[in-house]
Amino acid sequence: MADLSLSHVSKRFGAQTAVTDLNIDIASGELVVLLGPSGAGKTTTLRLAAGLEAPDSGSVCIGGRDVTRLAPALRDVTFVFQQYSLYPHLSVYDNLAFPLRSPLRKISEADVKTRVLEIARMLRMEDKLHNPATKLSGGQMQRVAIGRALVRNPSVYLMDEPLSSLDAKLRNDLRLELKRIQQETGATMLYVTHDQVEALTLANRIGVLDQGRMVQLGTPQQVYEDPHTVAVASRLGSPRINLLARAALGPVSIPAHVHTVGLRAEHLQLTDSNAADAALRATVQRIERLSDQYLVHLRLNDSKAELIVAAPPAQLAHAGQSVGVHIAHSLWFDAAGLRVRA
Image 1 (tube, rainbow, N blue to C red):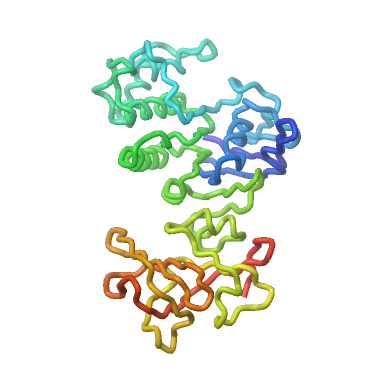
Image 2: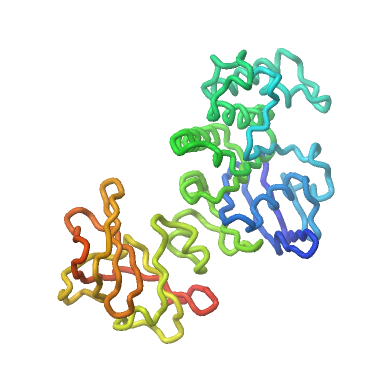
């Protein structure tokens, strides 16, 4: 495996800027996830790394070698697309073997067979090798698509939302499978998704993109607990972080230059409406059950702003009840959406 580096990379399509001054260094064996909404520049970044797009400025290096002007076939990378992109007229075996039979590679058929069987075992698809690709389930087809990338043992794997078209259970199963494979092979991966669960569970580091710019890059814990902007804070967390205007928290002591306050549901606690530690007072609007926890939707009495609190059954209130809210931790942001430190 090899490291991947994009340095000061920018890309425009006509009047539209897709990526602006992007810097990212991925170590050999590291799995970095790019997270962001549609149009943030995630797929363009992958295509720039693969050589499917040429940057307007900046450079791309793989294994310490500048590959900015090299053709995709000469970069030693593989690309897993959102759709399966299998050859429907070929068997699973031949789909997996196809990259190894390229004229650019001088590999004997015996070595091809050895490598295909090795990947099939890794994917747990040994019994499907002679099946036509069209006879597979969606999850199996995506496994083959991932296997076709793995079989080449390239320097870098590039993955563009490879699990997004699957149902929830298959997505969860394949996410665990992909993490296992990456750890076993020590693969260098740049993975794109809009799904925060994928990002948090797969990544060694998460890069949050917003309007073509890298706004934060760090471990999942760093990005979740210490977001640099409102955009980053709202990108991670389920339920989404409560973002309230400073004025909506009237009695709470907050510096004057703070414009927006972020309150995560798990950092709030329900108390008696008259309790001394109740920073806010609110009325319960409705309750959602979430596994062993409940999401309590509140409306603040003073400002009428809405708030979501994660509450265990022991703290559960009922619709219409008046409650107090204790704030254990909050995040502050200025008018530009940048983090304000205490």
